[in-house]
Image 1 (cartoon, each protein chain N blue to C red):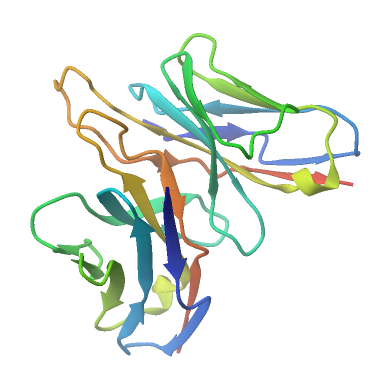
Image 2: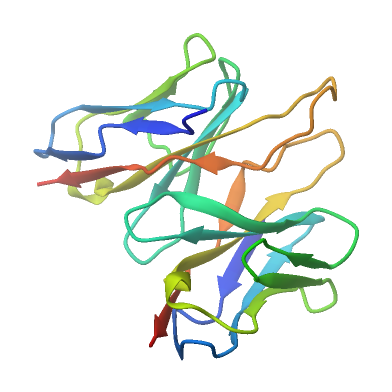
Length: 119
Length: 118
């Protein structure tokens, strides 16, 4: 298992442009989470999926943000009309929640993040 | 809703000295508690967690943390630090509800940068 993979690692974009990030979770994990981390702060929860269903969205997730997990595997996070305030590290994490209790639940495993700079 | 406060943003210590990184939390429901570590240019890694049972939990590299429900604290300690422990440490909580969320939706503290000097 190669862990949680995020691409790209770095993205510089001009204000007003759209950007999309990708997250590939650990293969058997059914839950996937997106977080945002700004300088000097801890990560802040944005949204999470169980399989392909988006179960919760934070109030931090404005209508310019959209996340998908179309087949319950990888996920994308798109930011439309980027603003300078969107500059941050975007973290993805995955975990296993086995509702049938055949396997133990796991903690969240994090990727290395995508650092977005809006200029 | 939960909140987490890490009382020290930076902690400088000398090698082989003991260290304590403080964490207090606030929650209206029971929580799971975690410490994550972030080494330079790496992702967050779980250091240790408290889910239930013994209130003292230990990591494989000598860190320990004690859950104190009355103080709503989960301080991280190590009796003797190494240069390689230099990193940023994050305390986090997850809402515990029977049959509800797993431990991936986390509320993090602001982080404590531990710098170990030779």
